[in-house]
Length: 219
Image (cartoon, rainbow, N blue to C red; front, side, top):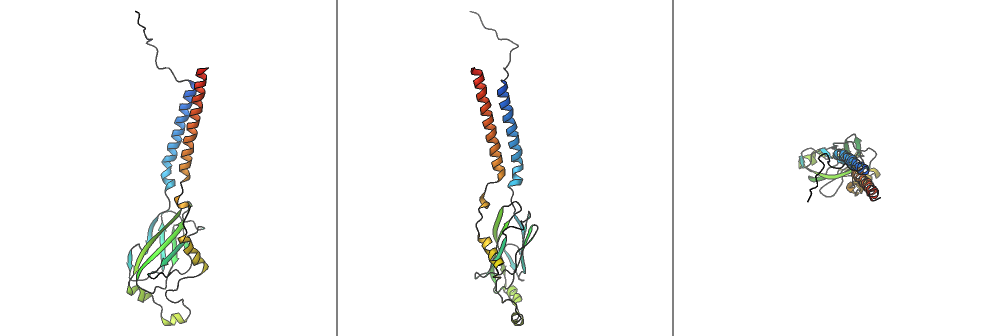
């Protein structure tokens, strides 16, 4: 009974050329996907509120003359941005239009008539096109309201009465903007779709080359 001796010089057989191509293509695709995923956190980071005046939850002895919201990224000036201030009884206290200064959103306010809790509602469009909305609150003390009340002479001279919100079309548009539900706020970032597409293409390419390799081996 003779034993078959293995060739000591023989080693693992190299992969056929089609298989090597498939492996190289797969490696390149995975490397590209990894690079895209590495940059995804920055692309997925949307505009966020970083500061506000008045601060959220603040108790004020002096009524504010404007609301200032500061974001970490620029706000799209042409976007449908809006800020509204609602009082304890549901009244609104915006005066004038919403202004955009780079990453700050400013809305003049006034005419506060009673102490209590006030709500700031905002909706802005970041430079990346993503919609950011939310609410803040602040409290006005009795001293703040008393100091903010206009004198009788000021009311007679044409100053808007206390508590009179801006009812201009621009103010109405701002209120509608804040109430509007944004369809894009729950959207998936384009980076995610790009990564999925790259992985899918790599898989298809590797499969095609593998099938060709099988056909060549069978022939």
